[in-house]
Length: 282
Image (cartoon, rainbow, N blue to C red):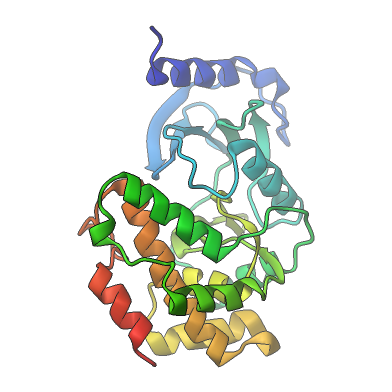
């Protein structure tokens, strides 16, 4: 019986065999050779290409039903963003989107100005895509947590106060949002900042998008970040709600996808910590 690893290897080799069909700016003259793993997330693994250092190959090594977009949907959104200079160009992908060859970015320090500018540019995109309902996502994560028998570790998003606040955020869906734009997901190509990992991109609440993007900053810097990214649309009350929602969604996502709250994950807040955040007023 073929294993998932066997199938993944087959898909990688198939993509490499199709090198003559890659949409490269400059034609390549030999079959690329798979290099080493240079990055890995919860769902995707990134490989270098030994004889084509301008490109990388991304393969999906884990699948779950908790993403906003299926792989092929993510690739479509990614390609649209790339046309606007906001993401690296996709030069090849298989039909399912599980293997993608893309321009290689460099990663380093990202200034706050560059970060907020990229987020703002993403919010200006015009593209038909799924709508992110925070209430729906929270309940879906909660259902998975219940099925795993670890509901005692999680805060219940169906509580009236939480549901009401998520409803208010969901009523303010106004633009394209990346929904995972940490600095780790920003790279550079020829001096231009670009975003990777469009798995959770959707029409959503820009305040929530800014809260996700700035989650690692100190509180006063987060406010400045949001004011810069959102401009005149910034609303402090909505911002407080968005920050609480960010804590909740991250808390539920980590339990749903990992089955535990790993100490190695900086945002892995406990049930008690998230409850405290929802009872506090900053």
